[in-house]
Image: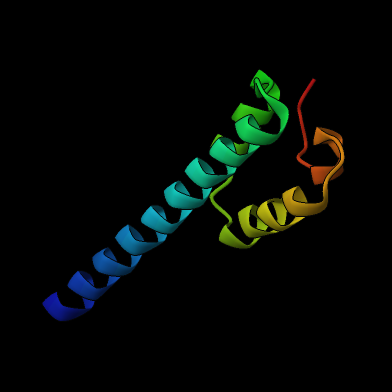
Length: 76
């Protein structure tokens, strides 16, 4: 049982690290490409824990002409 709990803790920690790394990379690239990142975009990225979604935004950033092309939902 202890091994299962340790494995689960390790997996959760790894996933959190993956999310944080992608968020940081996305913010860095957004600032490089578009300058100041709007607060709504910051909130949307910070509230996303879906690695696949973050990867999608990073992929879209490569070909985006404008910030809206990324498809990051910004609450009003």
